[in-house]
Amino acid sequence: SVPIGVDVDYFDGVIRDPASRNILSIATMYWPPNVDSMLYFHKDILPLVRREIPDCTLTIAGQRPVASIQALASAPGTRVTGYVSDSRDCARDCGVFIVPLRSGSGVRVKILNAMAMGLPVVSTSVGAEGLDVLSGEHLIIADTPEDFAKAVIGLLRDPELASRLGRNARDLVRDKYSWATVGLQLLEVYNELS
Image (cartoon, rainbow, N blue to C red; front, side):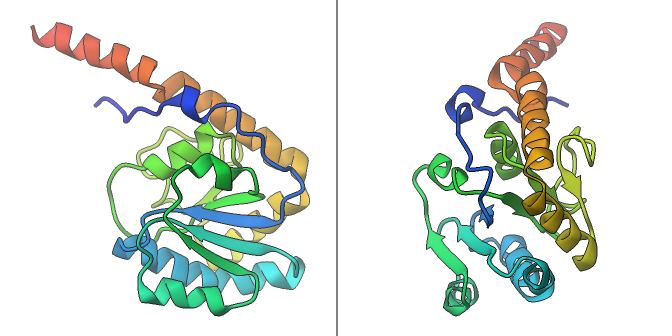
C-alpha cells in the first residue's frame, strides 16, 4: 500500500520555541474520536502533568469544536482556538504535540504534519497506527494516562530530547512520506499495473 503524502516543503522551516511549556493538539474538533481524546487528556492526563509542571498550558486547535471542547476553555491554562488557517503559526509555541487518540481509524495526517514541522510528538498506539515510527526515536508512544503524562513531562523538561525527536521525525517524514517519495511509489504501482 502506498502511504499518505505530506507537503514537506510547506511545513519545513518552522522555528519552534524550545522553551515552550505549551502542549498542543491540532485536530478536527467535531470528529468523535478527537473529541474523546481531548476530554480524556484534559481529565486524566493533564492534572498529572500539572502536578510536575504547574505552569504548562494546553492549546486545542482545530475546526468546529463541539460544546464539550469549547467548555474546556474555561479551565485555567487551557485555550480552545477553533479553526486555524495555518498550523505553522501554532507550531511555533509548542513544547509537545499530543495525539491521545483511544479509538478511530483512518489516515494520520495531523501527526505526519506535526512531524514534518519537527514537533516532538507524544501519541497513543492508536494515534500512530499504520505509521512506520519507532517510539523513543521519532516520537513517544504511551497508552496509559501515567505513561502519557510521564512522556509529556519528560519532553517539557528536556528540550534537547524534544528537539532530537523533532529532527528525527522531520527526517522520517521527508524520507518516507513526502509527496516526492509517495509519488515515486505511485508511479511504480501504475507501471506494474500497465
